Length: 211
Image (cartoon, rainbow, N blue to C red; front, side):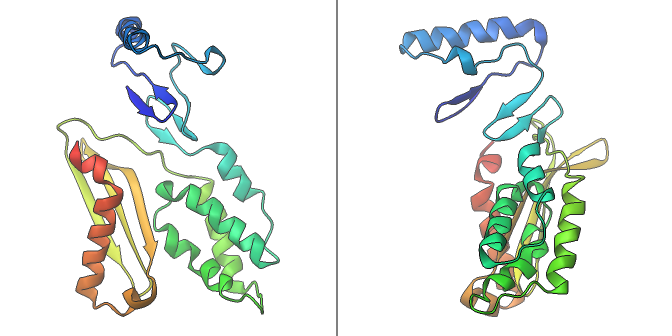
């Protein structure tokens, strides 16, 4: 069972055990006098929306509505529209490999407060982003006792990493992390940038390392 503020997801390894798992959960809820909103409950489903994501038996998919919000956008014509674009990218960042690298042209444009310009570089990055979003990867959960790998990367302007699960020789992403360097971080030597990549990733993926 996973609980986040006022959302709850109950999963069962086998369908025949699901009713028993629900009964145990309801017993705990009754004990503490907690109530559920029946209109927002769904039982016996193989997948559904949870915390803005589509949770299925195979893994976690990005919310199609959030993807469509970017795919339907035209080229930004002002700073506010660029901010809207980067905000929508941030909402999908865990699904996007090297998301900050893909968005660097947009971040550069945000600095042009008084002299906005949508460059060819921005347009190319915009088109490539849309093409990538059309085939976003499915994120999987770690297998208890299974092997996971963490890949780190840093450039002169940003850092990125990906946590992957390996099964039968195939590696599948669990979570993508990325961050743009701020101020003094840009002047860090390569070894310190890589250390920052590790620290940033460890903080972001702390729950995975605990489990």
